[in-house]
Amino acid sequence: MHGKAVLNEDVSIDTTVQPKNITYPTDTKLAVKIIKQCRKIAAQEAVELRQSYKFVVKDLLKKANSKSQKQAKAKKKARKKLKTIANGLVRELKRKLNEESLVKHQEKLEIYERVLRQKKEDTDKVYSLHELEVGCIAKGKEHKKYEFGSKVAFAAGQKSNVIKAAVSFKGNPNDNQTVEKTIEQQKKLTGESPKKAYVDRGIKSQQVGETEVIAPSNGKGKTGAEKAKLRKGFRRRAGIEPIIGHLKSDCGMERNYLKGEVGDQINAILAASAFNFRSWMRKALENITFVLSYLQNSEAILVTKAIRGNLSRDFSKVSSPLHQFVNFKMLC
Image 1 (cartoon, rainbow, N blue to C red):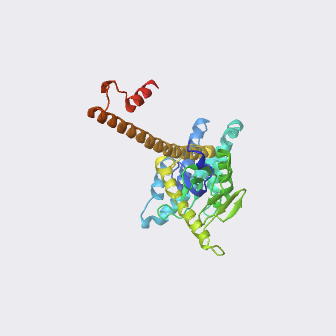
Image 2 (image 1 turned 60 degrees about the vertical axis):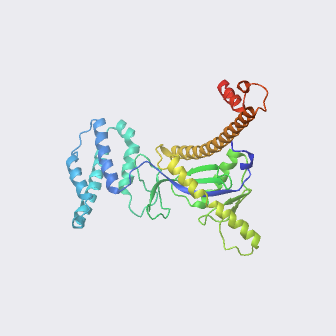
Image 3 (image 1 turned 135 degrees about the horizontal axis):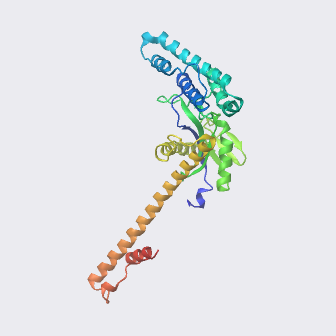
């Protein structure tokens, strides 16, 4: 689609966060969701709970979400009470459910217990009850300290800006661990590995198969020409940042609505495909505009010649290039 020249060019590699369609996770929110889902399971299996806590939870939630500094103690107490209620309901269900129902809901109950056990300093935490693979990723943004979703690595051509690879990773792996799979996917899709891949300082310079991964350095031991060449490559590498911005704002990566790890990968590939197709459409439109402009100019020349009497035959019988082009499109 984009020509063979695109296959052999150097690439820029960078990572970003693909946010999942979940609410901002807090212990209080997760505890309230667990209470509601426990009530739902009890209703499905005809289990009579000792207490539903419907109105109690409503009052505790108001206190837990209070913004007043005077209510700090009450807020802390309310949050603790909500977790206690959630724990109590989970234990009650495990006692009262029959064997068949317990096997049916065992996985959910284990997730609830895991969520209620986790603490602030724990790793591999659960941030969503329906999307367990969601990770907490800090990219150092001032306006958005933490993002919840998956990390995605992209490889884009330095001259063409065509995205050649888009790989989604579970959780928050180090950027160095994303390079190899990104280059592997490019080879799988295009049939060729790039000779050079330019990256930012979050990734170390290394050799991955046939590809030389180059990160910014102080340039010791290099000639002036080599430094100038590297500088040019890193300036072009900066072009991947606005590409990622367009992927999020124009191509559906602002929020991922597809479920699971497979949904993360599908959404990343669809966004990259949409970006490439938009790029191709722009170039195709430019070419069509150029052809139409040329045909209109050709017709104008024919009209001028007819007026001056340079054509001996009747002008109404002249088939201009524009008319030929329009007739051909109508036949198609």
